[in-house]
Every structure is written in C-alpha cells, then in structure tokens.
Length: 304
Image (cartoon, rainbow, N blue to C red; front, side):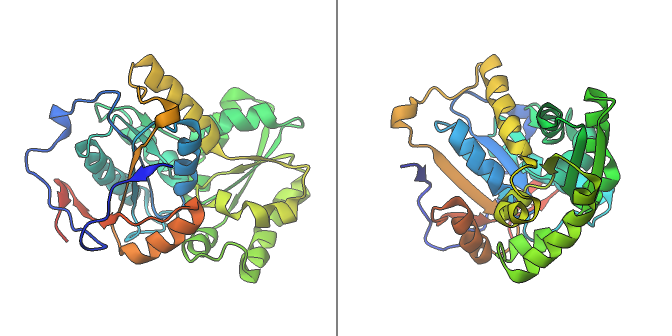
C-alpha cells in the first residue's frame, strides 16, 4: 500500500517559503520526486497513470483550484500561472515536471520548456503520436478546451507526423466544471457530451483524443455515446512512458525496489482543500488526507 505524508494538525496547511529556495541551486537525485500540475482535479488522471507505471516514485501534485478553469483564459495568463507553479514545484525538489494539463501543454509549454533546470514534459506530442498510431482511417477527433483547440497544437503535431491525417476538433468548455463538481455521470453531463461529440461522430472519426486531463474521468459517459469501435487516446499513457524513459536515460529513475515501494505522495492546491480532497479521493480511489493550500507569486510560495 502506498504511503502518503501524514496529515498535519490542520486539514489545510499554509506554506511559507524560504527566501533562499530557487531553481538556481536546484539539485536532484533518483530519490527526488516527480511533480505534475493541472488547473484542478483533472490531472489526477495523469497522477493515476504515473502510479501505475512508476510505482516506486515519490510524487507531488499541484491543483490550481483557485484559478480553474484555464480553457477560457488568455494565453498570457496561462503562461504566467505555469511559471508560478513550475517555480514552486522546482523549489519543492522536483526532478521532472509533467504538465498534467492539456491547456498548459498546448499554450504554455513552447514558451516555458527551456526556462528550468529540470525537464518539462508536455502531453501534446505523446498524445499526437498515440493517435497517429491508433487511427486506421486517418480521421482523428479531438475534444479539448477552447484554448487548446484554438492553439492548433494538436493539429500541428499530428500533421507533422502524418500529413494525410485529418483532425476534427471540438471545444468542450462545460466538461471541466462538471468534473470539478463531481458530476461524472449526471444527466446534464450526458446531454452536454452528446452535443459536443455529435459533429465528430458525423465526420466519421475512428480515434478520439481526450485532449484535456479532466476528460478521462468522463470515459464511461463518452463511451456510451461513441460505442466501442472508436479508439480513445489518453495522452497521459504515452507521456508517462516517455517520462520513465527520460528518467532512465538521465540516471534519475527511483532505485526503490518496486515490491517494497512505499512512495510519498504530496498534494497542494491554490484554493480550498475540502472539495479537492473529496473529489480527488473518488477519482484516485484512496483518501487524500494531506492536501495543503498554498498561494503562489513571482517569488514562488507565500503565505495565504
């Protein structure tokens, strides 16, 4: 059974940074944690995949719940939020950071990927590779946030890999608030999903990219609409495969034996902890008792 950091005396610990913390002095080892972030609970789909493929790794998760959703925000806002979060995660000792957020991967990754001393992993290229490999007809569907669709990131990545492939994209702005509210199989969710998927089904897609990390949490509802013939692509699966390969190449893969692994999982949020703990526990299938609240700024962490 995996081990989490014991809860403190209060449910929401407020973090005060040390002024000396910073990327310039950052040193990592195989024992350092992997970190990942999302605008909310959606990225827990990536966290779950990482637990599956990398059971011996310590991990840190950050949910920017005070500013969710990202999909309707301006690109410059998304980049700013990403810089604040990545700085926090690097200060926390991360040896690698996964953008467990489709919008961040699409909008911010090209602008921030080379600014840090640790590798930053996007979901776009792994998702595109998986989709191109999965499709038989070349008709690939993409459901994502408005920002991700408008960025054209997936479309460009797929065309680079397969010039003949067609990408049919649909923005699904209501999916994130529905997942954040815990409405995974509600009637409203089913109704909205049917509307979003209708043009993609009409286009004859045979593969569907779940281009936001919130969407794998709606797989059951989506599958009821598409049937079993359409292949679903969760970019997290290939992204974690590539993370494992990258860590191995750099000599940073955890040396903890898998059979006796007792990894440490830490969870941070920018908003209130209670809702994240409740929804997150349901999504991960384990209680999240050690969620801590932080407020981010240019200097990294500061007290709320």
